[in-house]
Amino acid sequence: MSHNSVLIIDFGSQVTQLIARRIREFGVFCEVKNFNIPLEEIKKNLPRAIIFSGGPSSVYEENAPKISPQIFDLNIPILGICYGEQLICDMLGGKVEKSFEREFGKAEIEIVKDSKFFKNFKNHQVWMSHGDHISKIPQGFEVIAKTPKAPYAGIANEEKKIYGVQFHPEVYHSIDGAKILKNFVIEIAGCSPDWSMKNFKDEQIADIKKIVGDKKVICGLSGGVDSSVVATLINEAIGKQLTCIFVDHGLLRKNEGEQVKEIFTKNFVTNFIYCDAKKLFLDKLKGVSDPEQKRKIIGKTFIEVFDEEASKIEGAEFLAQGTLYPDVIESSHPNKGASQTIKSHHNVGGLPENMKLKLLEPVRMLFKDEVRALGRELGVPEIVVSRHPFPGPGLAIRILGEITEEKIKILQEADAVYIDEIKKAGLYDKIWQAFCALLPVKTVGVMGDARTYEYVLALRAVTSVDGMTAEVYNFESSFLCEVSNRIINEVRGINRVVYDYTSKPPGTIEWE
Image (cartoon, rainbow, N blue to C red; front, side):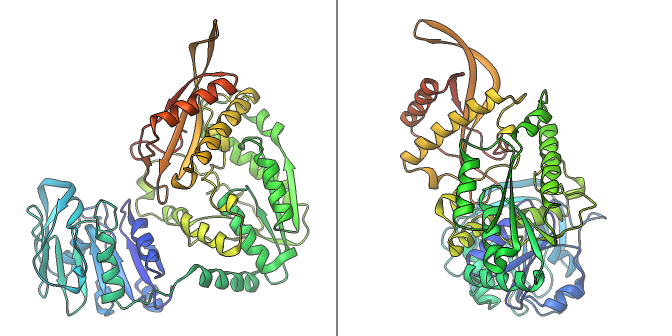
């Protein structure tokens, strides 16, 4: 954390990452830390601004997350969002009470006092999500915005540069919310918008050289955006000291294994190991239908195969991973202990406990779109950089039920047709993720004069910025008809195609 950065203190909000994303879009570096960050650590790094996130707790509860009151003595501008605003009030002598009526959804705020905080703020629609309300603000504060249900929707102590808002400026439903954050970070806190991907690239290359020295690094390459960018970055730093291992588990998209092999032997790393483990993975997955079990089997088998190949490389001391910032934040989330596992991540927490290699995670501070930007800065081919996200377990979690060689082949062919049509229509880069799911259901159909009894295929396409939330992509009905016709005509084994209209939440992007 540099002095020209912003520290976001996470009190458990599901959208804390969005605050970080917005601020980085302004060209200002920021980090998210858990609320239990020691005050000494903050003093040591002295960020230029601090933001308290929202959270699900009530400040008056016995075990509500808090922070040292001495944070207000650091003379650093502070912004509290939702729970963060209530916490500021509670800690500085105001009062927070339970509301009789919870306010959730869109609201119109009224600006009641001129403030640099609301500079260029024109669209007054904001997003509320709270069950408590402020009944008294601390001494030295004044109201700068209100709604009919939230008389303290915006408060400020202009002298001390401490601000609070009851709404969430970071979410898209707060139309001009980004302007508020920009005003706070740049106008009020005085941060310079000097953080760029070129700076990040140069810093990381220098750091990798310093950390690795003359030692060797192993990188697990999947062909996806994250591992490809990591491999290219490290290759630029240390060249032949890097070895990439590509484990082909047979659950990739059509011809993808060969594509990865060709791209990375021609364009990038000198040392490339291709490991064909298709049969091994298929044997291990035989008869398994439970999605969590599939993920665990694939993760365990991948580690075993990778470990065996890695052990053959003498002098290797580092293992490179494409861990991203959302995974880092999630792993230290205040509510992690109480939260349910929705699905296991393929590349998180799956490393063997006795692993002797040290971890090298050069993009662990980046979001997905930032990794793409870094890839372009490094000259990674667009076919790799713009590729839609693909899960580590691959088609195993897009084939619902038991996995067989026949089902893999059917899904690969169908998916290839779907993506081909999306690209031909010029829609690929407008969609965050598009794929097919093969359902464990067969239906009756008619082809020619014959009765068929074959699989149902579900098409999925969503738009998103970071995968945390997602909206359905609304294709023209003629496009879906064309895709359906092509798949049914060209892919043996499918006689019915459906389209998934579920957003995230309540659904997840993948089906398993």
